[in-house]
Amino acid sequence: MAGEKILVVDDDRGLRTLMKARLEGAGYRVTLAERGEEALTAAQEEVYSAAVLDLKMEEMDGMVLLEKLLLVQPYLPVIILTAYGTIAGAVEATKKGAYDFMTKPFEAKDLLYRLEKALEVGSLRMEVERLRTLVRERYHFDNIIASSEKMQQVLLQVSQIAATDSTVCLYGESGTGKELIAKVLHLTSTRSRGPFVAINCGAIPEGLLESELFGHTKGAFTGADQAKKGLLQQAERGTLFMDEIAELTPALQVKLLRVFQDHEFYPVGGVQPVKVDTRLVAATNQDLWKAIQDGKFREDLYYRIHVIPVYLPPLRERPEDIPLLAHHFLQHFNGTMNKNIPGFSPDAMHRLMLHRWPGNVRELANVVERAVVLAREGNICAEHLLLEREAVSDSGTELPPLTAARDEFERAYLIQVLHSTKGNVSRAAAKAGRYRAEFYKLLRKYDLDPATFKEEERSSGA
Image (cartoon, rainbow, N blue to C red; front, side, top):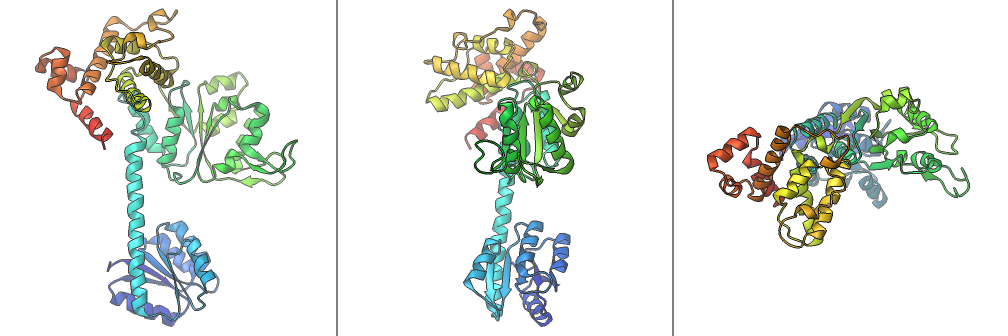
């Protein structure tokens, strides 16, 4: 691996000069540093393939420098040099992230051999991280089944803000997938290696919520026989997802505001503040501005969490996603129930498209699960759906115009046919009872690309 950049840190000038000559003679590019601070500056300005550090140095020893270097370049393989080699020292160096440990004096040939192996390890680490990134990019967003323009806009917004550390507030009705979006934000962020911790502020009794969120000290209240870390601390260097944040009491809102302002909080019963490094993703199904007007939510906290608002549309506003989601859930429940139901009858899909979905995607998943349980063979029929409320029976609900309803159903039908034929246009046209040219005309009308359904089939089989 000649040509790689190597950082050498040693306060012995003679040894530095000798190592530079040996390493450059082997084809490496070498940067020398006499002190730890000098080495850190170099690491912040340039990426290195490996580093060789002396253990005993003035001002900053090799162990401290090792830890600081790995904060700057996490995948850097480091070889520690020492004149006082012990097993305990080697173990400690390894625990702190060193790749290898060598005792002075050493043979140049031995150093070159170990350096070559260190470079191989560093290369593998980078490749693993590259593959992890590819997996995140490919699968985390693919967990969200959506073809509608509204959801595509949401996913675009999420991809743009994931890499930032800004606070995000997700707005949407129950069942629209706010926690799923929060997980995507976490997994595609720089905090993805940290924990993702979720709490539903409306599901925990008021008396317990403060302790759950901020933790408590031993003896803080009856039954507190030991100290407990709260969810804020458990999410250190990760993401805390707070669903139904509008349900927080005024007192807890004040405490949460302190977290935003000072990045610290007091556990229940605590007298010393606890520093915290956590990204907050909040969510609510309420209108927070109206809650402010009603005196239920603090305006200063609103501005703290409303840094980047993301609005998730309800399922009834993106009906083109219903066939995709329905087929996705059908495949899932086919697998969990060991069934092989091929799809939905046109009448069943028609009813799914007309339903108002007050429970959104969560309700759709439940409906499909029940239908899979009830269906014995063949497609899912309308009678298997057991929809609790039909759109036509919702009093006071404004129905869409007939033309719009017909277009919605026609597009959903085309998607279903393309799904069933895996994007084969000839078979899809025959199944729909249309000539191929006429079928293509319909595809253009609804901006449907058959290749999309072929790609879905390939990815699901990967």
